[in-house]
Length: 387
Image 1 (cartoon, helix red, strand yellow):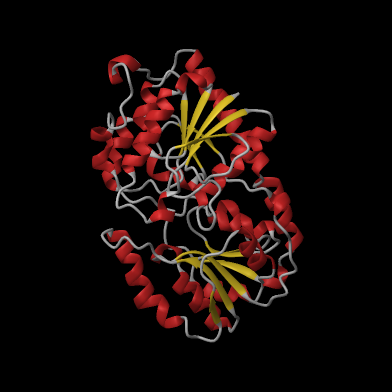
Image 2 (cartoon, helix red, strand yellow):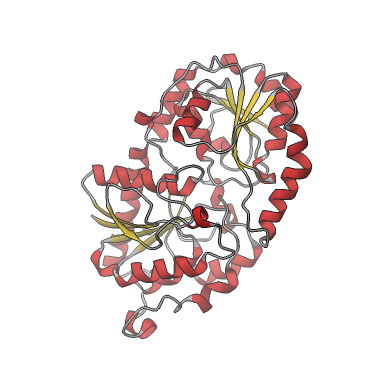
């Protein structure tokens, strides 16, 4: 198939440090090209891919200072994809709802993977307006706020397990990987480690620098008020952001990964990265965690922090080899690619049979797609993206 992958411009594909969606896109492109498909990646110019790269911006936006609103850049990207639409059999967007109007008017079918949370009240009118849009969830739990949407598949995120080393977990420490924000629960991870008396290594991205953004201000307040005072504890080692090599080195020797989330995490890529290293996961039993972790087999699902503390004493019950097998069998890049290929064919077949909504491209745009043509449709709905 001739496949377009439309990636966020926030980070490069793959990201050099933190960046879940971009890492998933990189794994998907690599696997699809290895299968013999003709893949074109729309992304930042500092991306690396085995497919054909079409650069929208020279560098990933967050590497040159986070813009207060990245919608303008993504509007340009989507306009270029639409301009090229006839070159593809399927267009796969990873940009969430801003891409919906483009898929509606495209001569080529689109699918949209939803990588973020879907429960924002202000977005519900938009989701209703585009209820025919073919969308893919990355966990079944992610679907709950939009039960009536046109869900065509759930495809779990996948990783290249052949590139991830396994370890013995003999480092004797707990690990936390993520970003500094209330929903990721780094303060709770520190509390668990202190209560069980185990060292905790934290590899986390600091909040961004654009303080005009209320989400960023909230993250900094959380760091300064709840996290920073705890970092002086001798049990706590704050490492900061790490690249893939540093991440796997940290995970493979950890006794367990702590995943004390406080939000409806759509997937949680770090959980399967830990499993690939053979490292069990101690997670709150909410959102996607029960779909990823098998309780008492590849980790522990906990309703409270007390339960997470108790689970730390049971880490030795987990077979690390089973954790690795679970990653290989359920969360490989190949499994992900096969799932998406099924979705592509289903959408393409539906379009060929005449189902779905299709508008006239010329009537919508005129002779030439404009980068700003859809701004009035989606600017009112722009909110900061979840990572």
